[in-house]
Image 1 (cartoon, rainbow, N blue to C red):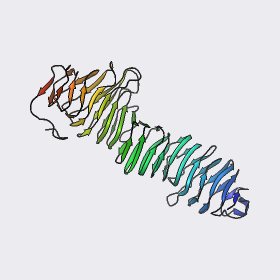
Image 2 (cartoon, helix red, strand yellow):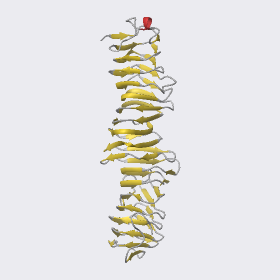
Image 3 (tube, rainbow, N blue to C red):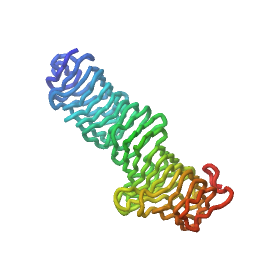
Image 4 (cartoon, rainbow, N blue to C red):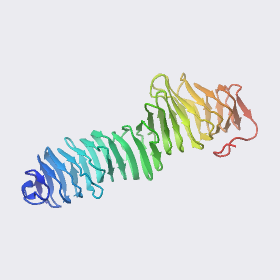
Length: 393
């Protein structure tokens, strides 16, 4: 093994005699140092490692580039070839460090653990596919579209469109994404643990979770931005928060959550979650948050059947709303109407407990425990009707 250092500008292979201090093409067992020169990859490359001794430029070609050790863009400004469809950049570790950068000219697949630590990545409207751990400790990400094949860990805060393809991906730090999308394929698991994934939602149909999102206290936070939004994809997460300042989010696809928070992102405004299809499983629903002033939430069920564990306000004094329409609601816990303006056009409630609800319009209660504090429109019925499983009768 030898250290091979650049001594001039030129093509990696064709100009080896004048580019490298060895006078020959670097070998697979060599460690390569770029020493302030511009190098163009003009064929397949296999080395042990590469890094920069002084600020340099590396133009990856439309060829495989393989390192058996670390590929470090430390002090190296790198660009990809214009057609990377039939080649990959492979290394156990791919590191973009201080004064280093990577700009894509085509979609790029990297077979490596990928880390951004002080450098800059510009995907230039292309997609970076990482087939290993994906970590960002510092640095700048521009227009980051990522397909992550895992298994691995993710700490990217500048991700725009993120797709977990397969494997188990662990989010090691809270993520605030750029405006974009989140897709988790059926073969993938994303583990949030106690970390939040915040996604500003600037369009429709941007979330589709067919795989698994696991968490302890970590939440998927959807920040509805600029206009009311809709989503047709599946959302399946333990903890979901829908936020927006006087904006709504309509979920037209399946949803399975354990805890749902609907709360405005601004003081004295309202965020609204609208049910757009039958059979949604909302878990424990909390309207509003305790932070800020008057950050309230609204649940609009339409006439769709649904299940939920409970419904309550985060604190007293919020101007929350629950528009239950003619829904059939399968309840296992308690609806507490304190600080919630409830309306109904004949909603049917099955199971659980209802208390402190002042309703505008009748709520038909079937097998529901009266927790007191309800007005005359909370009507306790006998027998069973209106809900079997997830189907309204």
